[in-house]
Image: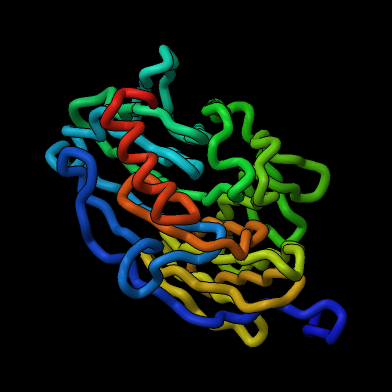
Length: 284
């Protein structure tokens, strides 16, 4: 199907290569959003991709650290992590599971490996909160792998639906202000996947296996690269002679000022100073 004026396919506006970095107590990863090439992509503040079979790359984990003013989304592809916080919450994240944490007015938590060997892989996405919700009560949506619907698309793709809707399947993530889409799409060789995205939403795709073409005509995007998708109402992805796999993420932009200081994301410098003061005083 060709693009039309009333149903335009989103083309690739730009591409970004993940930048090697480390975070937490020395976890090695690729920072894709939140680096000099792409500081943010409203409403998305950061995207980290991690994946290694070397324990030294992940074993130190993410000890206690604070957040205020946004949401963190952890999606595990392989390995196991345990999260705990200063409110008494705890839970385990395994392959295929997702945790959507709304930090709101403040939380201190840790994410530590539950393994000493083997592969650890996945993504962490930071999603901004609107000004009206930045001081809401913290909450978690911990979703095990078996609660994430899997759709066999008519074009040949296999789609895990974390947030949003594909055919009759609705993702388990609920009540998020940015109305997100978060899909994990596996494209066999020669297959295609088409998905509707609201015209005003920001959208990107990150390829983490093989190569995937986006748009019509297709722009090929290789492994460990992010494609920022231009305005339109649908995404068209295709695989060539080899399979490919990517995450497709979209959300409603907030169009509000972003003032960030490390793990605090607010709208003004005064709010950042208050966040630092509140954390230092133990008010998280």
